[in-house]
Image 1 (tube, rainbow, N blue to C red):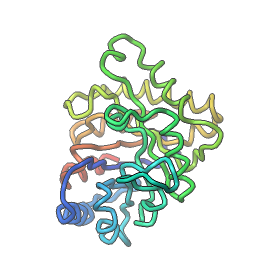
Image 2: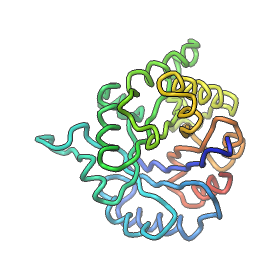
Image 3: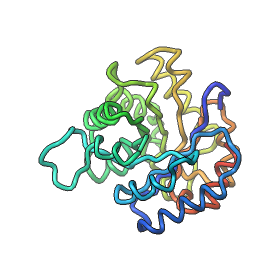
Image 4: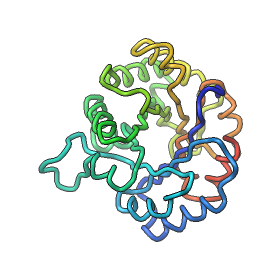
Length: 250
């Protein structure tokens, strides 16, 4: 990665762990955290946010959430607003994850509104993009990434509070990982898309994470690529040893 951009290692716990288990995991991460200049974020389920925030207080690990609603408030039973999430102490929120797109039909317009709500509430957004296996095999993956970015990002977005995560859908939970060169190619393309939409300066500053089955044994090779600025970690973030092992390469 470029020395001008601060590395980010973010853990997405998805729908895993109980509150006590999550609290203990955070304590273990903090106790075993390697010396690093990287920004570390953990994103537990909504039910854990407040309890985890008390553990992370005064540590170097930041709190993130996995989702927010696109509206500020209203009759949306079961949903949680960005303001509510921010009040737990969360500094970041994941938006546009492929699982939200697949299972809940989230559109580019939905994702853009969530980013705006998160930023208006004082949080940064981790915006996910990525292609499916048939799109990769058909050779249209860069077109897919371009479309996903163009559908979401516009001049209302504060790029200083935005992280982009490339998550090849075909690698999530499958154990398959894009090669370092494959990841770097897409990350470079994302940077070019941001330059077109915003400016070259912003594109050089925005951080782009790899989100496809990063583990301690492949983290170093991925993180040394020029345009890979960190990782959005799934399964490996549920184990303190694995998560800290990835951080040690940051």
